Amino acid sequence: MTRVRMALFTSLDGYTPDDPTPTPENPMGEDWGRLTAAYAATRTFRAKIFGDTSGAGTTGIDDRYAAAFFDGIGAEIMGAGMFGLHAFPDDLDWKGWWGDTPPFGTPVYVLTHSAPRPSIAMDGGTTFHFRDAAIEDVLAEATEAAGGLDVRIGGGYRTARDFLRAGLVDDLHLMVAPIFLGRGHRLWDDLRGFDLTHTVTTEVAESGEIHVTLTREGDR
Image (cartoon, rainbow, N blue to C red):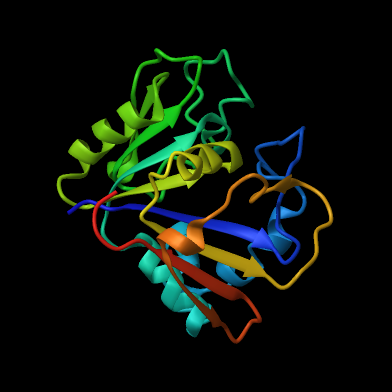
């Protein structure tokens, strides 16, 4: 059965980055590098995102979670910001800031009020589709496209909170960096009760990263 999965980065004080002026060189804000340092150092991340086949990178607990992140995904849903539409909102030729070969290899549904827009087929099996519809409707389309594999909610912050608030996430992986940001988006404000509907486990990696998993048993 298809499950809805989400992975999020957060600081010890519960923030995700908020940068009002992202650029292609720094699309997620200046705090993003600090927040994702342990993940970006893994062998899996270096291979999947940077195409580094040298075997360099960490191979401990962080890498185990990084490998699981890519396993069994049949479709992805993301917000316009994660695709990069706010960088060039009126340019129909803009293909996002994931490069010529995005790391998804699946259909990707981009939530945007600028839809309809033509779909964009990329190298490596990724096709970006743009939708302006209720998240439940987009999830139904993505679930069908996933062909029995899982659907991953890729973010960003607002998209993640919308799916969490609607109770649509079966498996949530929080990567809690051992840092205090003191600024950004408050991920969990007004969101409660996930410890009552999901089984919670925690594991601390060699890097100090805290991996929190929330798993819901059965159907939504």
